[in-house]
Image (cartoon, rainbow, N blue to C red; front, side):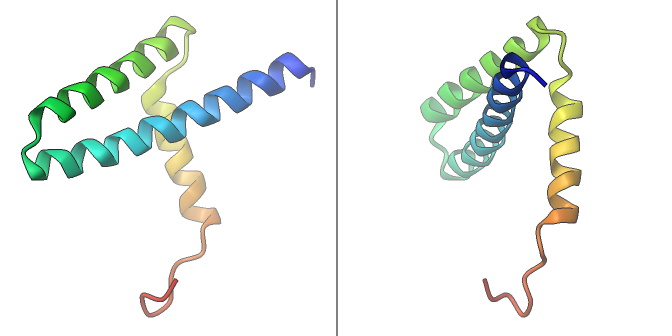
Length: 82
């Protein structure tokens, strides 16, 4: 594996995490009714989506794969304690 592939993998991972973080933020601001911030978050998420598409990557599939991976690697909380 060369350094270019490793760098691309790191960038993809960071963008996936940012996309998911923005999704959570969008939901929170929608509940608060702060539409101007929601619009900015949606713009940023769309920018990430188009960046993936421009590079031939399926963002939805990658988000799902990330979710599946986390589901099996993150230990569940017992009795709601961290």
